[in-house]
Length: 577
Image (tube, rainbow, N blue to C red; front, side, top):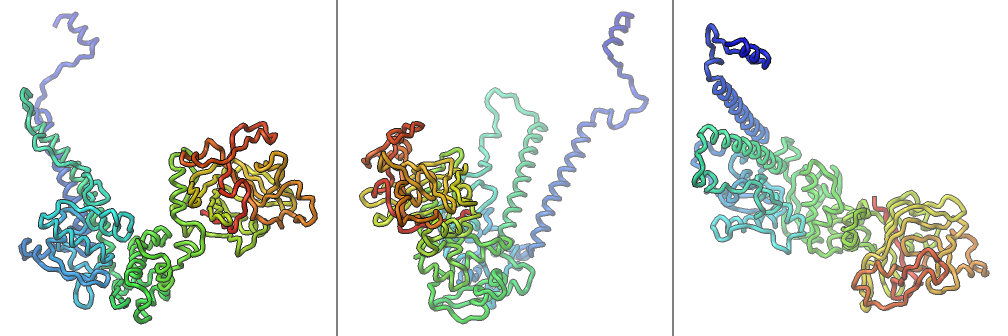
């Protein structure tokens, strides 16, 4: 090398490769292959560990190889006798395994046969709602015989919680992104042409193809493990718990039919609860239809299998299906469940349908108020005027300390129904009136035959409330341009306990605001806030500017067929949390 070349090499940091005295395996050109082999063995070890983990979990659940000395075809031809919450069902094993990868198929593959609870006749016991299981069996028979290609829950059952819960769970394959059978798969089937080359493409070297395939297979292996863990999670509550007493079956006769539960389910509401005693101490039930009882039992069973989760109002109402609510209330009471707690009071003005409507009317708002999905706990009635009294004192004593609040009022004679949602508390701290920054919203829940208009009526950012002595003053009177009103409560386009201000000096007027009756009311809405269908309701509008209120030039309209002012014959207050 010339001096200039040596200098250039030195300045660039170049190093000469000098032959080693003795070549080892890392320097003979095979290090990449050897490292890959070592890594490949690590991958195999990880996959074997994953498989061992799943097998150990199955063993911990009582799983064992399915009839190891019996051909699989013979195992699939076995006719299984089942006790489904008291109903006797016979079905061929292959039918239950027809939807490959489903919870039902894995559960009845044979490996969990020794883990099932058995009744006195050695039938496999399943704590499942019988109509849902029977539907699955019927459709699986047709699916297995290729009479149908998929199974979808019928529209009439879409909101029947016991039905949808069990059908979706039993036919669920976690490897597919779906809530119901027939959904779209997470991993679409491989395209048969995906492994073929396009004309003119250079062939991919075999090792590189293997690398790509290995990556895909590893991803699939991890997904398969996660899916199988979900199957096992779904199966476990239907197997033995390991507690002999809890796994013991107890039954009751209901109108000639048998309802069976585990002792664990029976005592889940208390060892000496009415529900437990219906199965353990008391005689047959003849004063409730079997359909009502089965639905109630399923509510309790599902809560128990969800690691003792509390029963919710949504659970109880979802289980009602198309049953008559009065009969359902009666059956709930018979089996020790508080019907008012889960369904709301029988004489309540508020219904779950009303809450659904309110949620629908607000669903597009960015900052929509929080509205519960159903009546029943935690939506609890804390005031009813015809029971607790109509005075302002009666009302604020009942609602103090509670928020958010929902007020429901019924207009006398017309039966129109209004709701007021108040996000903060209503507080009376002294004799004087008060103003508080609290969002509140108004809704009309029921109209009349001639004027059926319902919907959102308006909102406000403040509450004006009377004290114990002083009424809320300077309330605009939309019925008369020359007068003002006082009220005990003004919220979101509604004023309660209104009285012409001039009348306050008359003899006989209440001496204190706390004695004011809340029956008389004023209701209004802004013209631009009304729903489109309301616009055909012709009624006179008023501008606040016509009454000397210069800060608002909008047009206001009455919301009741009775006009600006009307009497209410019922008022209820509910706490929402």
